[in-house]
Length: 482
Ligand SMILES: Cc1ncc(COP(=O)(O)O)c(C=O)c1O
Image (cartoon, rainbow, N blue to C red):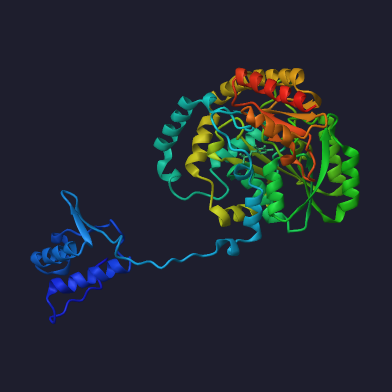
């Protein structure tokens, strides 16, 4: 309590002692500017002195301009011109470590052209928020908060909310995966899951085999963990298996993992065919290289039936860690993803999760679980497949017609990938920006500084008119540069 240390004596008038005390506290900044002082009544009771003494104290402090009264509200501190603060400036740049430097350097949100409402932006591959089933989500929220608010608002388990884990284990079974000896840990999206695996099973200098190009956030995470990447090209023929074999032979000792996104790969949008999935799995198994499978977008297949994830080939073995996320179909703002892996791996990661953030929000997990378990989810998936499927077809046709290209990749999902004919996509971006159209230049997804003649077009949040108009502008600009 503020006045607990004030010991009154008989040598000086009480009001002077209290004034000196308050003055001293204000000068040290211990009673901050504009903070409220106790009322004269409260303070007189607390200090066991007459109320008149406190009134006299406050009158003197007011006369000195150190406090002021607001009618009906109370008495407040005015220390603005009283505290002389000598400037103190830590040099944070000197304290910053390599991890922060690298995260800042690689932060494309800070370093690339920002979104603004007057632009047609093909940058984003986030879901269109207008399609979210908010009424159903509200019901789920009310359901969970009325059924188990005490549990959800208290600390929970690091592994996650049990009903959601059970739901997702079953969800994995429906994808054709054997869940024997497997378990699930809930994470803050794919991003935290991947970060946790890298934190737990790699050391700086280890090598990761990955597709080239690949997900920009994954590149950033691998780099901030000090890992080396051996990229294997993806082009119109899919993954280059010869390159994969030769990169493994040349680097086998240093390779810790293979990271792969077989469905709606970001940025190419390609879906790996079942035979290729089998070959990839077989090669990794032969070389004893654990696989991290990024299953983030599997639900957005428009033109064919479900393709089994690579982890379904692993049966009762423990060679594949699968990271799932609903971020491209449901509420990325909830930040919920999951790691599906061998029980021993999950057991280790459980402690890592507890160590780094205790657990992912139980309220959010419970709302998502409630939403997923009713029919609304199925209906919603049907709706968005139709909406995004139409946008995909439109974007694909427009790009084919208007943009001079070497090839266009994309089998579904929320984006297309275009290889231009010897046109630098950064120069193209700068020109298009002047015409109010932006997109993702391909070098952002390259693990070896290439990809300068490629670009990614995300269309999920654009209208049909914007898709057509924007792609025509990109096409016309490419022709100007040809
Ligand atoms: C390849 C890939 N994996 C996963 C994700 C989802 O990440 P998160 O679940 O952290 O939102 C994305 C999002 O863009 C992605 O492109």
